[in-house]
Amino acid sequence: MMGKLNRAEALGISLILAISIMTVLSLLPEEYFGRSSAAYSPPSPENLLGTDDLGDDVLRSLLRGSRVSLSIGILGSVFSTLIGGLIGVFSGFMGGALDDLLSSLIDLFMILPALPLMIVLAAYLGPSLLNVIIVIGLLWWPATARLVRARARQIRESPFIEGLICLGAGKLYIILRHVLPNVWGIILARFVLSVPGAILLESGLSFIGLGDPRSPSWGMMLHFAMTRGSLLRGAWWTFVPPGLCITVTSLGFILLGMGLEQRYKLSTKSVEGLL
Amino acid sequence: MRTSFIFWIIRKALRYPLLSFTVVVINFLIPRAMPGDPLIFVFGEEVYAIALSNPDLTNSLRSKYGLDLPIIDQFWIYLRNLISGDLGYSFSYGRPIADIIRERLPLTLIMTVPPMILSLVIGTILGTNLSWKPGSLKRIITALCMIVRSVPTYWSGMLLLLIFSLWAKWTPIGGAPPAGAPLSEFISHLALPALVLTMYNLSYVTIIVRGLTVEISGEPFITTGLSKGLNWFKFSSRYLIRPSLPPLVSLAAMEVGFAFSGALLVEIVFSWPGMGYTMWQAVTERDYPLLQATFTITALIVIFANALADILSYALDPRAR
Image (cartoon, rainbow over all chains, first blue to last red; front, side):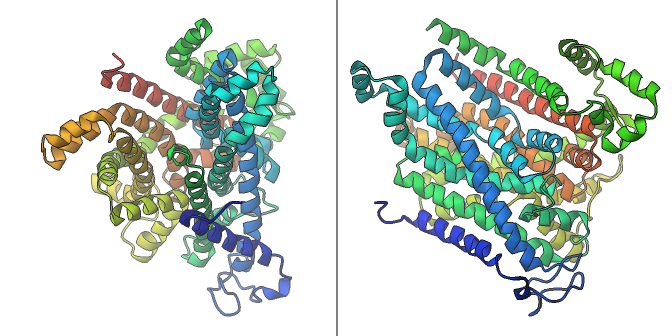
């Protein structure tokens, strides 16, 4: 049904697969991970990626971190795409005063600097995975809403919608049965392109110390490397791998998203919205 | 049509005051929407427990913030304090917050403004050239931009710190030089963070400018420009960059937001005591008033930059006049 993958999609999917394999490997029993519990031991056959300041195996933290980073990235993106998609579809299709109101709202949220506001919200809500997801969802939707709105407006102007209205179809019916299937491609691409944003925001929040300490993500590994002195000791093996993982994951989703845009012949504007 | 027009006016003229007001309201509501005594968020959890044993202090603060009054009166008190420049008191620093911010805001500006200007200039040149000259170089640079966008800024900061400060010992490990230090010292402290921020902003500017130029490259005036047989410099500056100036100005304003957010985390890595570092300390110390004040000021600066850009791009666009 999907046809042949284009190059960006294929490359993106392979990067995402590689990270997913890490998530699966994190379920391996304890004895597969490094034995040494000396602090700051560099990479060796015993501990493939060395140990951190507490003598914890870095590879194990890295694999476990993949679960947190990936799930928050995906769930945060689902949440924000849902909000953005809904606002975009209603604003674009309904038009009139509702559209004016909602698009003003989109404009307002576009300008508001997201990261500082997220930091404030997360600091008040307290560190938990759910709060991080909520904060990302609440503030990462405007770009999606703007693109979906533009597309929904286009559809509204097309003749078949006029025909449906003449046939006496209700607005909600038209939105659900005829508008949504037509904006599906853009929503899917936006969802994929929001994941790297969500992952980078999560890691940023964790880096500043607002992540959930019970389930440390890659960002939190970097936070520990920063605050507990691994960085200044030059223990590169504690902070090079998590950053590399964040980069590879984000890149994977960006490439996949770009590929989807090519497939659905969407403009490159959506890539810009992500950046 | 009428309501549309009214909303259009609101969007254009009232957008920025409205946005600033929204920021203030959000800031006012957050601590009051949280469960528990709002005074917790004045002191932070730890100091709050100690402060409770001193009813004189808590009562005087309660009446200062009007915490026993109706919410709308509290808002007026809050607004009055804010307008008179009273941002509250930081218990973790033991100083008025306005003083702390006055000291630290310039440090953030020193760190963010030069990379912004650099990336705008280089990005415009790269972007226009890329859109016009196809080839493998174009693909490589586009790929590079994607990769830079995927790298967390603070992580690249950590890598540079490792390589240039810890291994090569070329640059200091962090912190800011004391006021009045020679310029060279400032430069050596700022070199690495500025490099990170320039790369980060550059990737964004390049891609957007490329998009802008591609958009106008089908216009008839481009053909006119080409047929004049101008050299590349004259052609690109008059026919590619000049028409893109209005959107470029808006881009520069959007960059202020990105630059501030990006600098926030980079400052932490390099212990550069600007707004981001202050925010980090506020988070660590649970100093809520300080956290909110840094957010308010950062947001207001970003909004102001956007307003300025809107006016400027209007002035630069002959079609709008």
